[in-house]
Length: 141
Image 1 (cartoon, rainbow, N blue to C red):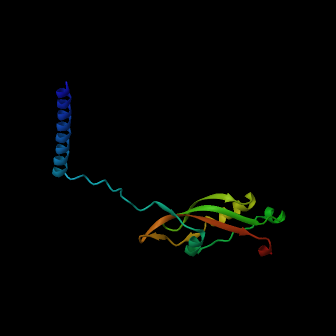
Image 2 (tube, rainbow, N blue to C red):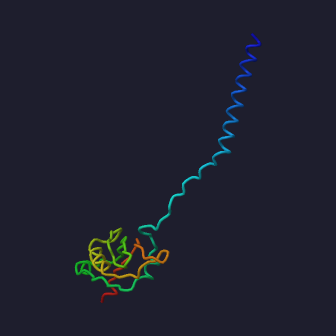
Image 3 (cartoon, rainbow, N blue to C red):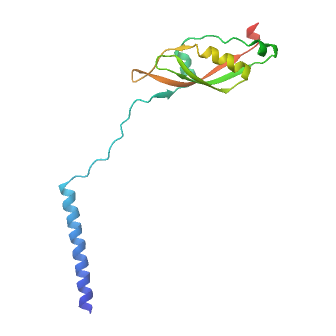
């Protein structure tokens, strides 16, 4: 019986040695394949700060102060998230905050603004930025 246990151990050790040898030979014959590297392309649009977008602004149409807002003495800021095309035209806007009477006037003015193209790797690219339009009654008198 003890000889049978020794035989099992010997067969098991032989199998381990054989499998280790086969793995080592396989590793020598074919080098490991490199992992694929994902391609990094140019993004479709980048987000830039309001200060950077202001430096690109070339034509700014001032907003018309709504008569109803003036009569109600409504002042404040309208904050918009704006998408600018690679050519510098305002493509779309979303009002983030501000009085609804002022927001309409702000969006009507900002959609007429023109920007210099934002360059990434020397190529124009679309931009998303924040635009703040301020309305003050004292400036309208």
